[in-house]
Length: 411
Ligand SMILES: [Fe+2]
Image (cartoon, rainbow, N blue to C red; front, side):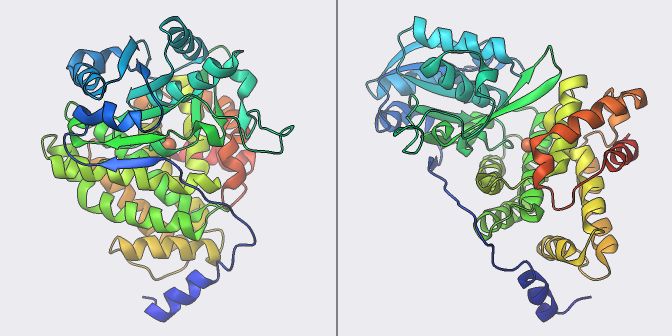
């Protein structure tokens, strides 16, 4: 077992980052009974006529009635409700939500839902402002800016998010992931104006979240934290958030899944998800996401489930690739109370086994074959993983064969 001094030395091998920029501009409010004060808070962000974007399931729970009352209680108007967001949102849905904003004369958007709802709201905000097809805006930092593109980005309509799952962290991130069903890919739109202006973390909004989805989205949060720390785009700022996210996950994930009425655990999971996404502000993420995106695009595997299955294999793959990478996993193991000694492969295996046992105890699938991914699909999945933006920021650059091997192991 490494001594504390060795651990600190290993961490410092990560060195002084030559460049990164970090910002987290979303105002986050956390507490109980915040839904009833939504209008009061959203007014401070410039909203007056609000389009609520959600899905039919959430609409059916009564949460939208509470959100509507909260908005109106603050003196704002609810212009309309768009509730047709599916599990994996796509371009026509984004356009329909933007059209709804126009039709209802909205000047602001409130997203109440999980990752798909919030990402739809972000992307439709772009279409609401600029029109066109969502894929016209694919990529990062492509939105119009003042001064011929050199100045501040032009603002979008005020967006507030009430996450109803504890995982994606989309309520404070600047990216939207949208499906292109014809091409079987998930594409991303990311730019500074997409940061929501307000995120409202209230455990009441997760009360009807089924355990299976709480488990899957919680594993997405764990994947964000772990990938954020080891990514080539890691930063000390991102680490500060991600390590605290892992502590909260360690102490609350199981409880939040087993006891849906445990507001403390559910509330803490909302915070963990919110912290875990922060490394992505510097672009820090990794190939568990590259492997998982095509699983969702081709076989409709829910994002968190795919990450839960793929993450342990990626940890073993990365950790064996060099001591500087393994050192980061040692930090994570230390925080989780796991063995920190041995070579990179051993450290990776220890953490991977912890993740696998967590996934099992949450009652999630542990194999891609259990969720409808056939072996014959691997070449197509590999193609998607190679082309995924998350591949560029993994600490190790995988070959096509590496990806195929990772999929075979996870099958
Ligand atoms: Fe994710």
